[in-house]
Amino acid sequence: MSEAIAFNLNIDPDLSSTQLTEQFLILTNFQQAWKKVRENNGSPGIDEETIDDFSLNLDANISQLRNAVANNTYQPLPCKQVLIPKKKSSWRELKIPTVRDRIVQQALLNVFSPLMEMRFSSASFAYRANLSYLNAVEQVARWRDLGYYWVLDADISQFFDCIDHQRLLKEVRKHLDNPGILCLIKAWVSAGVLTERGIVKSAKGIPQGAVISPLLANIYLDEFDRIISSSELKLVRYADDFLVLATTQEQIVEAYEEVERVLQSFGLALHPEKTQITNFERGFRFLGHGFLENAIFPVDSPKSESRGSKKKVSNQKQNNKRKQKFR
Image (cartoon, rainbow, N blue to C red):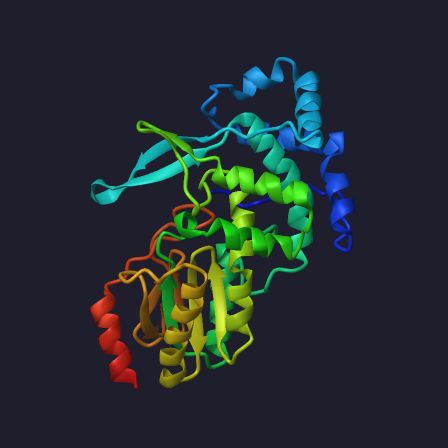
């Protein structure tokens, strides 16, 4: 999934929800959203309308789409399921919205993303303008140099699929309290996906492949970022991949339990095979880089700008034993 990049629409971060909604519905915003969707050149959704199809009657299509949103007659379609082969005979599921749905999502992203950039925690690095996984790697090195030597190397299990819609909308409302926008977001995340079995809907999960999903993912974990960062611990998070750093063994063991508790309250859980307590002497991998004592080196290429592959040898039993050992 690519980085979320907001157009420079000179959005004032102090705009009220009503004013921001007005900016969202400006025709030029939809025109810029179309340019971004066209630039990405993605595949069609379940209606089979392509980028080229939409551009055949471009001005009318953009105006009609904008007016449908403004008049509350716009209804998103379910996503198209795309299965991508992974290693070990597994599959990665992408859920592709239609071209029209992607344009509306991008139009909201254009005005909502700059607002959230002013509010997100500095511990969050994924899907943000002017930040990349390399910035996260550099931040880890800075905390190491300040004595944060013990590490909880963690991954959230099936993060995008486990995001609770009700809690997500509650978190969005803290920043953008507009019924129309909230209904739009609810419609996008609950539209479902067209599979061989028909349309499948769920009260959980946001579609990987949707334009708006990276921003929603960061909003969902923003409170987690603030809870962990408000303690003596240090957090570096890249989507569902994160490190918690501490100065002592005791602190990191307590951090493990605190992280589990907080994530559980969000309806999330740590991945048992991709989570471990470690330190810089033992070494670990994070976002395609190896960390060993004072050295940092590439160990494999990140899967994309949004995620780095991690190979961890721990499992849940090993983690539980390690917790006991460090007490």
